[in-house]
Length: 347
Image (cartoon, rainbow, N blue to C red; front, side, top):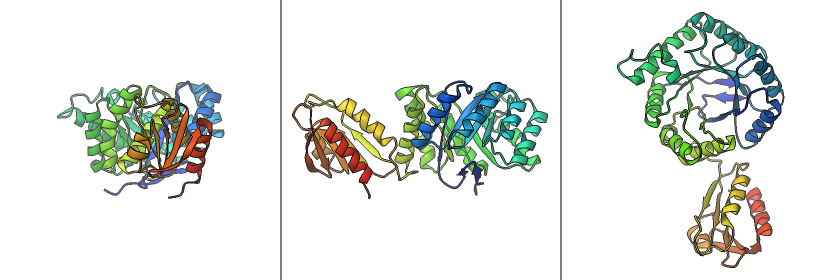
């Protein structure tokens, strides 16, 4: 099925790429914190940032945030169509609504009319909270989702508005995968993929990967969020890992780290975290290894473009590239040389 493509602020959706997205984790009126967080995530590769709108103060705060960030800003609206309209009139790049709580067809038509006039795309998000009027109406739970989505889409089609992004989210990885596989064949609109309420840390990342990796491999997904109860940079790290492993992005680094053992005489765990922080801002197809000793370093990680390993001597590190030693160094010098190699790397 041919997919629609259109701009969202400075970005384009539906062109085959996957736009990365996160959401502010404080009340939108905490403007200074959210501007700093958004700009950090943008440097790490975030494409869009979404913010909750709970009241008039949040609408005004969004306008201030947009003035000081370089990526498109999305307003997340529930229960009050007026806030959606006001946010669009204040220059927001996209809105996200839940058809189950925007205030009924008449209010939704008002929102669509303003979005059409101002060329603001809308994401329609259907999740378990949208199904109250549709629950049990279909032959199964999956069909309930599509009844809710189709009912909402009928208003947009009636008003000839098609700059739409669709999401059908569940907290079940298997159900989420099935919903998006069906939606990719059923609708011409770009899809925002994600698993809702996935959890935190390893649990949330694993749950999300189970749902989203197969979709990405199939070419499904135009925007992506890994929703973690965690630091927003951890969401982005999981997103980038999924894109790299699924083959949807070729410009992201690979980091391999050994688990350490009794042969390790240097602090590999902290060093690995420092290297990971460095690679957050690198957009190259480079493989970097952080290893505990020469056995796992020059040997097992010999395919790494650049690597750093314990040397077998306390606090002395071995740098290597493609299985060949580049010399022994103390930590700061070794890290500085590693950083320079990454900065200068060209495939």
